[in-house]
Length: 167
Image (cartoon, rainbow, N blue to C red; front, side):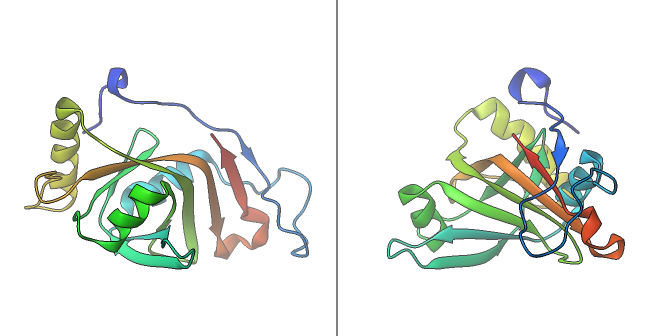
């Protein structure tokens, strides 16, 4: 199930090489991963890593369940959780898929989802992925992470697969 385009930001970003000095990446575009590859990893991962920043500047890394819908990542958390407090103070975060050997990593900005129609639609997608749960905002807020950049790497294809998409 997908979210109607009237409620979502849909686009296909252009692939390029990430800036990784010292790793010997080629300058050509041969071997770049297609956006569909990254989307599949972002949709199919069961667990996701979320990195936020504590008030003292130190990192906080935690696992969450979530869904990737129309180029945004959605998850919920409790209002008393460290990640909630961190995101309220600094909305910048990083989301990573569970398998590092073929990973997709989203750097973006989180914001609370308050639109009840969108929450209802997202909840159906979430319930299909994580039965019998839904994306219920009553115990804590639902966040949308809008990507600024997505990185991906398929280890089996060597570093030549290192790809970046800017939004």
